[in-house]
Image 1 (cartoon, rainbow, N blue to C red):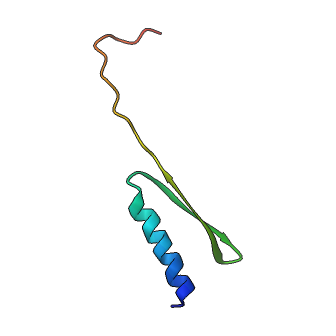
Image 2 (image 1 turned 135 degrees about the vertical axis):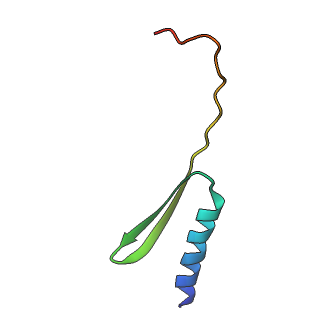
Image 3 (image 1 turned 30 degrees about the vertical axis):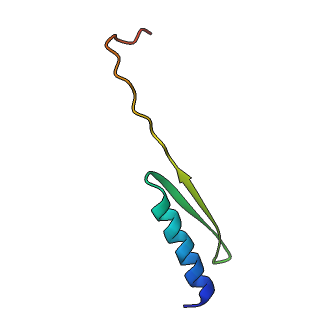
Length: 55
């Protein structure tokens, strides 16, 4: 494995370890990895309302 391949794998691993919820998108051009996008989702707990919603 070349240094460049190991570096790419390390960056993918870091992106996966960094987020708890979300996605990691790998962009490939001509069979080569060109970009890594990591999107993290953060969810906030909602307060429970004692009154029903009015529509």
